[in-house]
Length: 278
Image (cartoon, rainbow, N blue to C red; front, side):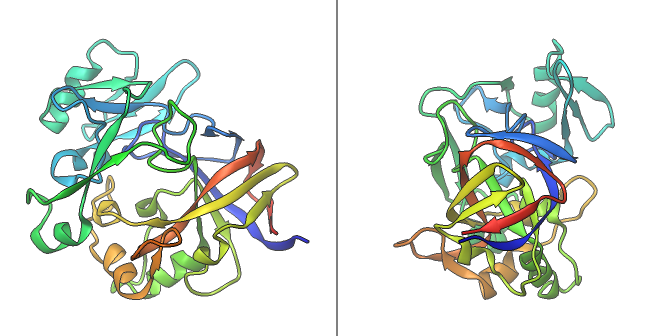
C-alpha cells in the first residue's frame, strides 16, 4: 500500500561535479540519475583524482562556477561572469588558473576513480586552508559504472529537514543549495524525517520509482561559500549536534541531511508531482 508523502517542490541538477547547478521544471530520470546531472567533472592531472569541494583546501573555488546544460554542450560561468562552453579549447587553462592546479575537464571517470573527502570536523576546527586528514572515496558503489556520483544517482531532501536545519541556524535560514539535492520534496512533517525513508520505495508522478538506500552523511561542503552565498558553519554544526544517524545500518552515527536513492524504474518527473511512499 502506498501513502501520499508530499509533492516535488523543486528539481536541481549539477552538470559539472562540485560546481553550482541549475533548477529545472521537468527532467527525465533513468538508472543514471537526472538527465545531464554530473555528466562532467574536473580531474587533477597530478594526482589522477577527481576534484571535489569535499576537499575545500584544494577545490572550494569550483563553487564559484555555475554549470548549465546547453543543447550541444555545457556552459560554465566563472566568478568573473564570463561564460565558456565545455568544448572551448582554452577551458582547461581557465579552470587551472581558477583553482591553482593543472586540471582538465572530463566526461568519463578514470579507472578506479577516487576523490578526497576532508574530515569535516577537522575542517570546522582548523579552517579551510588547513591540510587536514582526508578519506579516499571510490565512486558510486550504488551507481552505474562510468558515472561521477559519490554514492547513488539521486539525492533527495525534504522541506521538513530544511525547515528544521533553518530553525537551528543562528541566521534563521539555510539555503537548499548548500545540500545539493536533486529533488526537494515538500512534506508536511516536522523535523529530520528523511532518515525514516531508508529502505522504502518512493513513486513520483506516474512512473518514476526510487528506492532509498542511505541517509546522506555531510561533509564540509554545506559550510562553504556557494557563489554569492557566504560561508556558514552552522549548516553542518546543526546536523552534528541534532541529527547524527547511521547513514547505513551498522555504521557509526554521522551528521546527515537528505537521502540517497537508486532508480528502480525511470520516468519523467515534474515540479508539483505527487510523491507516494510504500
